[in-house]
Length: 602
Image (tube, rainbow, N blue to C red; front, side):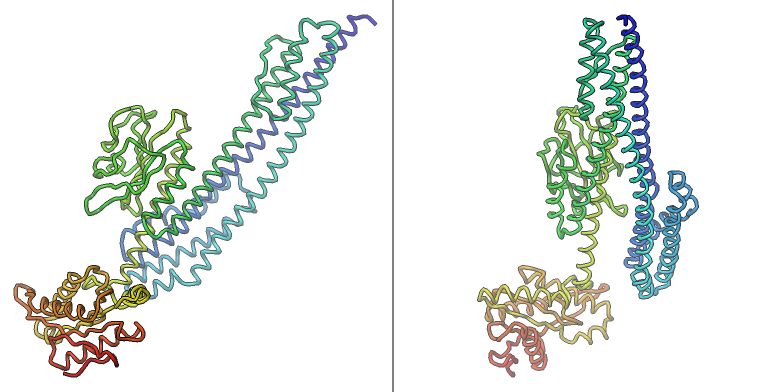
C-alpha cells in the first residue's frame, strides 16, 4: 500500500476522531451547564422562600413586643410586615416561577396557611392589648397553642426546603455523572487521536506537528487530573491540531468555571457558618464587653482583609466610644461625636472610596486618601446602638457585592445582639427596681442579700442591716395626698443612696419601709450610720406643690449578722428592732438584742 494512501486514511481517521472528541467535550460542557442550572435553581428557590421564615418570626416578635411594651412603633412595623406577607398566591407564583414542583408547592401552601392562622392570632392579641386585656393578649401570643402553630408553619417550610434539596441534589448528581462520563469518553477519544497523530507524524509529519501533539497530550493529562491551571497552547491553523486545541480550551474553561463556582460556594458556606456561630455566641453574652470580645474573635475570620472597630453609642454624651477592635485599625478615632460619621447621619452603609465618589467621615484621620473605609450603623427598631467600622489592610481586590453582603450581615447580627442585650437589661431592671424611688425592690433584696452575706460571712466579716420606717406616713397621705407621700418616699430613697458606698445596697422593702445593707460594718458603726441617716432625714425640707411637707422622721432598727447564727434571720431581727423603736415613740434608733435577736425594751 502506498504511503499516500496510508497518510490519507490516517488523516481521515484523525479528522473523524477529532470531531467525535469535540462533540463529546461539548456534550460534557452541556452536562455541566445543566448542573450549574440546577444550582442556580436551588439558589432562586432559597431566595424566593427565605423571606417567609423571617417574616413569621418578625411578625411574632413585633406582636410580642407590642403586647409587652405597648409601643405603637412595634404595631407599625407589624402592620408593614403583615402587608408584605398577605399575598399568598403571589408568593406561590414566584416560587413556582423559580422552578418548584406542584408537590413541593403543596408543602409551601400549607406553611402559608398556618402563617395566616398565626396572623389571625396576632391580630387577636393586638386587639386584646388595645382593649386593655393584657392577660388575654399574653395568653394568645405566648400560649402553647400559638407556639405549636408556629412550629407547624416552620415544619412545613422545612418540608418544602427538604423536598427541593432532595430533588435538586438528585438532579445535580445525575448531571455530574453524565458530565463525568462524557469527559471520560472525550479523554479516551482525545488520547486515541493523539496516539494516531503521533504515529502519522512520526513517519510523515515528524518535523511539523510532533511537538504540538506532545504539548497537547501533556495538557490533556493535566486536565484529566483536574489541573485546570494548565495553559493550553494556541494553534490557529485549520486542521486536526487546531480543533483539538480549541476543544481543550473549551474543556479547560468549563472546568475553571465549575471550579470557581465550587470554591465560591464553599467560601460562602464557610462564611455563613462562621456568622451563625458568631450570632449564637453573641446571643449568650450578658454585657457589651462580651459582645465586643466575640466580635474581635470572629470578624477577622469573616472579613480577613479589613481591620476595624466596634463602637457603642454613649447616649449621655451623644458620642461613639470604641468597644473593641481587630487587626489594629489606624485611621479612625477612638471616640467621636455621632455627627462626625456620615453613616450615622444618613442611617445607611457609607463608603467614601471605591467605584462611587463620596464624602469621607470626619472621624477618619485624614492622610492616605486611597484607604478604603466603610461605616455601617448598628440599628434596631429605629434606634441607633453603635457603629461598625472597617478599613482595608491590603491592596487585594475583593468582589464588592459579595463583600458588602457579608459586612451588612455582620452589622445586622451585632445590632440584634446589642438590642437583645438592652432589652434583657431593661426587663431585668424593671423586675428588680422600685419605680418610685429607683431603689432595689424586695426581690432584688433577696438576691443581693444572699450574695453579699455569703461573701462577708465566708470572709469572717460582719454584715449590718438597717430597717427604716417613715413615721406617721399615713397621716402625711391623709393630710397632703398620695402625691406628697410619694415625694417623701423619693426623698428618703435619695438619702439612703447618699449614705451608702454602693447605691445598690439600699432597698424599698414595701410601703414606707426601707432596708439598708452595710457589709464589713460592725454594730457600733452601723448605729452611728443609723443616727446620721435619722438626723439627716429629719433636717431635710421637702416641698410639694409650693408648700413644705414635714418635718419627716424615721424609726430605725439595727441588726448585725455576727449576733446571729445565720444571715437568714438578719432582716427579721432588724424588723423586730424597728417595731420596738416605733413602740418606744418613733424617731429613734433601736439595736436588736444580741442573744435573742429582739430589740431591748425602752
